[in-house]
Length: 167
Ligand SMILES: Cc1cc2nc3c(=O)[nH]c(=O)nc-3n(C[C@H](O)[C@H](O)[C@H](O)COP(=O)(O)O)c2cc1C
Image: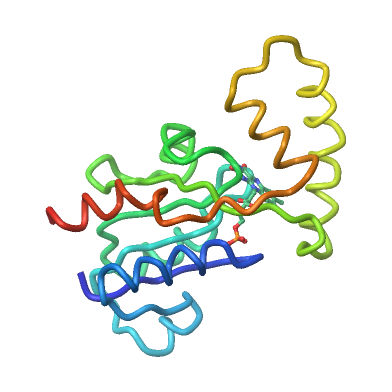
């Protein structure tokens, strides 16, 4: 493994990338920086934020680099939605995929992304609010939608760090 490469919109994926740097000592680049400096074929861990189950930047990064693991950062709880994300992004089975819960703050979003999430909060949030017998995961998602949330923490990286130590 030679580097950590990430794509962020509102900052949580960058926070995870920097936490991984502290733990691994690997150099870190945004995907835009990596395109200027990292030679193609370099072995990387790729981190991207999730938009409608798509891991932003993954397809682009996969064309240039040898991706050893993917960390997909979304609103859902750490370790959830792995199958959906793997399928949607056609991430090969042999590449470890970790989902990590990031942050959500509608005030940090702009343009189309803000509009999309306003709609999501309005419709999905209403659906969840009215739902009887919500699971703890659904309660957490509703709380994120209604009040925002900062969920980035080192504990969420435990599975990634366990994988890294053994690879
Ligand atoms: C337009 C849009 C679509 C999103 N779709 C999803 C999604 O499908 N699944 C999910 O878990 N989170 C989704 N999110 C939430 C973000 O992935 C989450 O807030 C993440 O922490 C953002 O990372 P960032 O702070 O690095 O930009 C979406 C956010 C936006 C703005």
